[in-house]
Amino acid sequence: MHLQPDLLARWLAPRTWPGLSAPFGPGFRADCASPPAFAIGCGRQAALATRLLREHGSRVVQLLDPRIDPRHWDLVIAPGHDRLRGDNAIAVTGSLNPVDDAWLAAADARFPALRALPRPRIAVLVGAPTRHAPWTGDGLRTLLQSLRQQVLASGGSLLATASRRTPAAMLELMRAQLHGVPGLLWDGHGANPYPGMLACADRLVCTPDSVNMLSEACATRAPVQVFAEECTTGKLDAFLGALRERGRIHGPEPSPVPLAAPIVPLRETARVAGEVRQRLGLQPDAVPTL
Image (cartoon, helix red, strand yellow):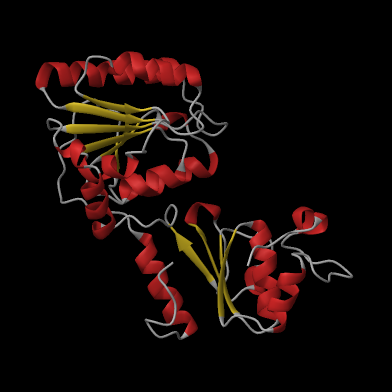
């Protein structure tokens, strides 16, 4: 079933309004007449759908802070840096994602060529500057120059991937700095080797702008360095602080950081799924893993 939000639903969700009838089209009206036993929603418009389903008897879990009282849902799962409070709120460090040992093994098998690259393999994950993470092209150039010199002097390979948000000028900068260095650059063309990079990297270096990207990197067993973390503000800075407290990210040193203890991957999805089952009294096979 595809939800088709009307104008009021797009504007007002997850709030309700007088005369609300079929905010997501006729299919959703019929579904409310025979609601599912369990529903998971993500985002503001889905929060209205799960709220209405609960009023018709469904057990519902809402992902991300709906920005209104969480009592309208059975459970609300939100990043800890959102500081959502409530007896039915579950805080998550970072974002939920599928990265675990099985996922990494499958990614490794899909991109065998990456395993043939010389070690240590350093993977650089690049997003884009944002208001709360205003890193610069000059800073990225300095980082890549340092990594390039390290690989050329000591061996290994340098892998890098851009995102859909990466400015074209920064992509060109990445292309110039990786030229002549063992490794690869994914620039948006062809199969995206990002999962394989997570699986094969001996070390990960991330820009600080994406909670999703940082959460996925920290779900591996590789050391994670955050580039330009000192520029972050607001909730993003709070998230990085939580990662530092867990010992999961490391500072801007260009060389690998000696670790005092084995790395514990950040894997919240299985923990949260277990808590959902426990709180709602569900059998382990009654609901798929979130």
